[in-house]
Image (tube, rainbow, N blue to C red; front, side):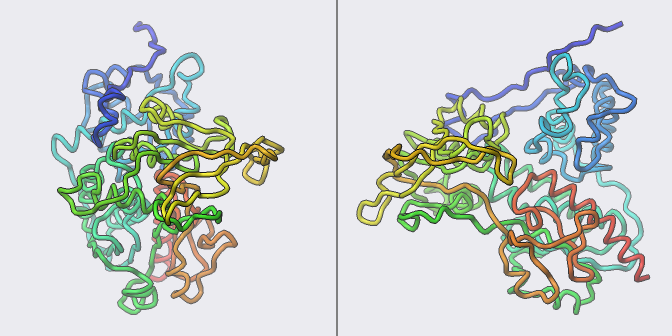
Amino acid sequence: MTPVEFKRIPVREQSPQERVRNFNEVALGYNEEEAVAEAKRCLQCKNPPCRTGCPVNIDIPKFIKHIAQREFMEAIRELKRWNNLPAIAGRVCPQERQCEQPCVMGKRGDPINIGKLERFAADWELEHGVEIPPLPEPVGRKVAVVGAGPAGLTVAGNLARAGIQVTLFEALHKEGGVLVYGIPEFRLPKKIVAAEADYVKRLGVEVKLDVLVGRTITIDDLFGEGYEAVFLGTGAGLPQLLNIPGENLNGVFSANEYLIRSNLMKAYLFPEYDTPTKRGKKVAVIGAGDVSMDCARTALRLGAEKSMIIYRRSFEEMPARREEYHHAAEEGVEFHWLTAPIRVIEDSGNVAGLECIKMQLGEPDSSGRRKPIPIDGSNFEIEVDIVVIAIGTTPNPLISMTTPGLKMTPHGTLLVDKKTGKTTRPGVFAGGDVISGGATVISAMGEGKIAVEHILKYLEAKW
């Protein structure tokens, strides 16, 4: 009997010294031998707890068993039964808090590296040729999907595989939504997003880019054109701000603007791409989520001498993935815990510094985390020339303002039944950040799958 290996196979990465000077992907992934060795660690549990932690319910032991047996095409076929975007999910899904957290192997050693095995299978297929599954005959029903982010791509692909005629409307000039404008190249290469979006199109989905639903066309217009249901996966692109003095100075960015300039508009390739951005030598990023880490790490790659995370709580309350924190720390990002900004310091209309105050933690607040409380007299200043605000986003209200019957929550998100994805407007469904205000890519995909199930039931009831 082969002895159990409790330590996971390490994933090769660019060194911190090398990667901080480029935008190439940090994690290099498994090769075939490494993937097989890691897959063989899986115990193939009869009642696998890993699957209960997966928002899209992938049969995890089954696809891993195929990898262990070197049946790589069978592995990707199994993955795509549940998830149309495995190369994306394998890179950005927080597996350590989901499928890997309950892994039985984790009780005595390292949990199976499920995410990196998913990435391996998806990348293997991209290298050897993408297979399009057999598609059913069209059933003669039309559905519009608004937003080509992770929720929208999931819904469009799954509906197409059910024989529905799907049109996907995207406001930007590329598919992907937050996957292309919000996640840096070094974490999720644009070619990977493009390949997965192309797979969805090859399932029969028609894509219309540069269409801003709510302005170019309305939801009522879509119903008037014969669409029988509409799914809204429009994300949460409206940044939350600090409301402190100096927030409107030159050199203060929202995280969305900062990352869009670099990611989607390729400012990091200037002057090859004519999209200059204010780079700065000393950059402060407010917040400690994954987006904050992306901004701080991007600043270093754009030439910052110092890049700092300013966070009003402690390390333990930090919402970012530990992997993202680890990579940021390796690259030289500085962390100011229990610190809150109270004023952006001005010099002739530009950012010259940041006045902060130290905090202490009190009792838990509504988020379940301990509430930060200012310490009187602890004010101090930090010299910076760029401030990036990365404290969260809310949905753009454009669609709700132009669609009668759509109700919002007090938090600015769409009001939906999360068990069905139904909004308060009959025939309109929603999922992803537009209903959560900002969560994970895989949770958006999971909400999309729930919506698909109930869109099909809705259409069936009309037949």
